[in-house]
Length: 155
Image (cartoon, rainbow, N blue to C red; front, side):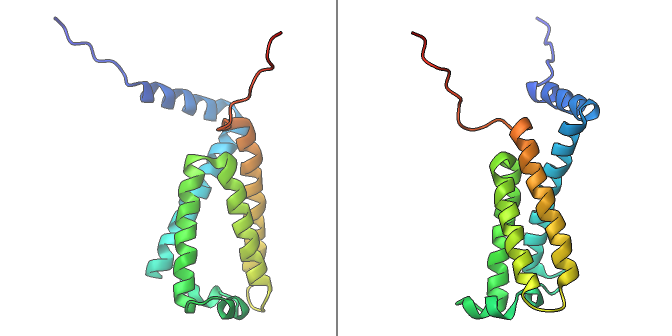
């Protein structure tokens, strides 16, 4: 009896996805944003624990630090954990998670606009907020809902 190797279904799905990315600009944009909003929050979130990119603590507005029962550094560690969860959520279900990321970015923009010195970063993050909303809109077309649509009962 000969053993026949079959390509896993995953490989077939991947090749179909790659072909669609190549031929459908909207689908390609959806995947670029999905990858970006998965990788970047993970990267920034993880870096909150290691501080390789920057000293994240100085981005927290003093009034926000005053509201937190934690130290500034501990607050930024919580921020990092939330960003990690957000990145994972976008990877799993961008249809819903993109709105969470957009809301998170809105909070970051408000934080950065509330004291001087970070207006340029606030503007950048506002652009990212718009990109997250674009991902949410594209996900409406390209990421199926978890809620099944019900067809009307037949009489």
